[in-house]
Image (cartoon, rainbow, N blue to C red; front, side, top):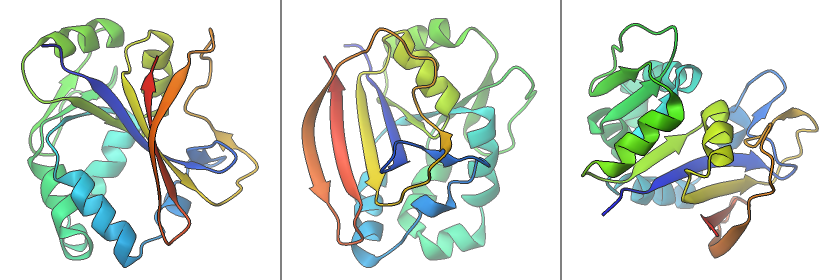
Length: 186
């Protein structure tokens, strides 16, 4: 059975996953219900897929004491889970359970999907999301719509053509105003 490739990302109500400076801190409005959702989400099995920028941001935070204190379940999952970072410039990875892939993204993802193991999960990594969406390799999207208008920023789908259709499978509104939407590629 082929592994699935999914995306988990926060997006502003006007469709951006980062603001115009690349900042994503606007998406981390924590409350007890959100933290419970994130802990439950982190309990699943997956192998993470990152681009270099997202990898470096994650590797600076999740192995820290602050991460372990503020979101212990998520920090534990982030650190123990296998990770693949795609980069043309990164030579090695310091974060535990991480390998660096330098091969063609689409070819490597096709290979990884054909191997046994848990599903593959992309977080952040907008350029990778756009490239793999264009190639038709992403099976599902879990998008958290955050009720903020950024006005400008980066979308997850820059350069995607062909108007790929997604089917909404489930939604969940959280008390902090976030709405989680689960989509599958048609």
